Length: 386
Image 1 (tube, helix red, strand yellow):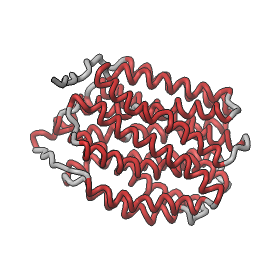
Image 2 (image 1 turned 90 degrees about the horizontal axis):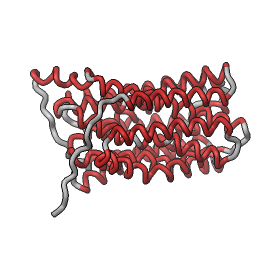
Image 3 (image 1 turned 180 degrees about the vertical axis):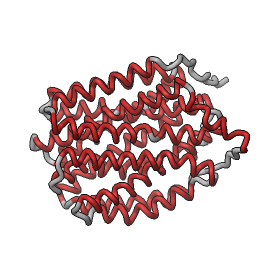
Image 4 (image 1 turned 60 degrees about the vertical axis):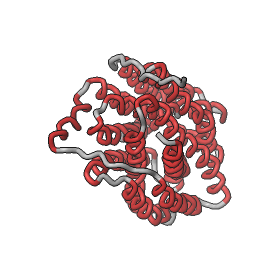
């Protein structure tokens, strides 16, 4: 892949993840200040993450059907700008939920479409590195959003935060047309092949493992934000957890992608998922800010491992099914987040917070075990420079 193409994909992804990283970690606090209880908050996030999953899933169909990928991103940003602004103007759960569903559906579609473009251009020997760079945008967005969101809310208010986020849509609208695109014609005879990857045991195990790991990470994130709010931490302090996690995981995105090209995707994924288990366990006894920083950094590793997972899906899927495979895999974090937030809200309503964190650790452990059952696959050969 050309460096210009990779940089532009990274830039577009960075803008999108900065929008998400600026608002999502503080939404539990925003809902709490609106008088929404934890159970209702969990249901709200469940719907929101299902909307992201639907957006990610639909990106594959749109990509294959119209063979145009930049235009849907532009239209999504155009619609997202006023919708994001309005999120800061409402103070009731129903209109806020409707706007959240719209903006998060758009976000899922944009992120998945950018991954599809990367998959179409990345060569086999560089897929780990390419998707590692794309995954680094998530950490970068967490850093920018983490330092910006708390300061904006503490100095001004949530309405100002949503204005800041809406303005980022303008950057995405301008940057997306710098991305190269190409057509992948799919004939009628190739349609059955497009469904083939989802009939393999390895891909089912991979998909389910990522759903579980993200359920544990997202559910624990909801519990952490509410727990810190209950302990009296400020919005700035709560926001710094995401920024610190981004600083720690940013180099990991490149490292994991590079390692998966040479050591194999499975071993790298198992190590990453094990770290998520540890991140949930740290919160069981957490009471100081640095402990919440540590836990958030460990839990964020599952996000950086998405690049490795996407590279593995790209390895396994035939070219004519690649867009569909990547789009459906891109939905796994959000399906997991929907499950995690929904179950965490119910668990916190019936159990103490420490027990809730332990349950999340067990869920992540099951995901790790599923990865271990994936069939062994040799790493892609890396060409040497003579």
